[in-house]
Length: 406
Image 1 (cartoon, rainbow, N blue to C red):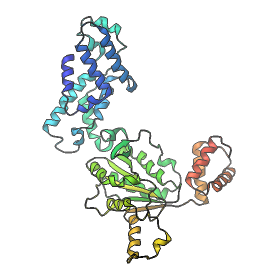
Image 2 (image 1 turned 60 degrees about the vertical axis):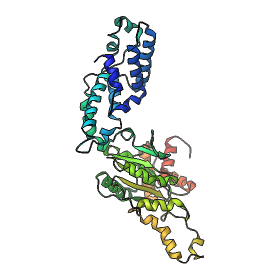
Image 3 (image 1 turned 30 degrees about the vertical axis):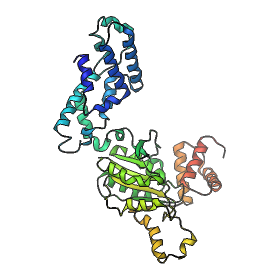
Image 4 (image 1 turned 90 degrees about the vertical axis):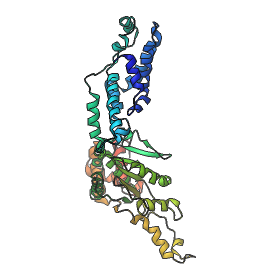
């Protein structure tokens, strides 16, 4: 394929057209156009080659693999229909095959190939930057076929690159550096976590999974459990989306967008509570159960709260006032937590559990100290911190491991 043919065919990509928006690919196509316009002045061509390599090298020296990675993670019609028997349709699938052939040729192009058709091409090599590397034995069509089979676990587009997201103005935004917490790093509360793990596995298996309320004392590892689940089951197709309380009204649209995605999603609401006149209260009730739209089987809501009934009540709320049906009103305020199919309670640890947590964390952090002395200092630290909890235990051990005098 000539440089002119490659340039034209890159411009006519259909299914994988999104690849052209990448900065490195844009620099590559600009380099091709500069080579086609070459009339003897090497400066513009050297500048174009340098611009391409400057964009390429932070991602790797091997152009074939960098381009293949862009292809494999492109969000397009065919990848979205990977799990349907008919695919994306005859025309789309045909264009996909053609696009892959074109991009295969682009990913195999060397600097020598680029310069060879030009007058004095051999001499031009000495005026150019050091050449990039290629791997022509890579077969893009074969790699892409394998990638489509992995979609239920690996996802596509941003879901292939990231596994934790936030919602920004209604748009899913990836968290580039999520909390790396793992379940194995959370000692204690194994019985409580096992219920949540089993529910999450049901979600991943396509079985009915409950919405989960993790309720209990502060610092007992409720939020850490949810974040650790996302890390633990990322390879099984689990993704986590954190939703703020003021964003609850956006959840129905988000759930509709995610319904056709082959991955499984936890919509995570941290530290949830409401006042009795909070509009978000009714919104979440409808999301959990009660709206005309059914909940997709690939989405579950996991929420954490320090309040069992989620709605703040005052003593004045207990008096009838001018509410004729005060009992009904109280029942409505208490009904939200009942809409979570699974409620798991994380209580403040007793002395024995606190000791187990401290000893486990100390061993992980390499703290060398007699156990009786370690626990005496851990209890004193907990007393100053306001009480025992896994969070307090972790803070104590990390300070101790860091050499801080306590």
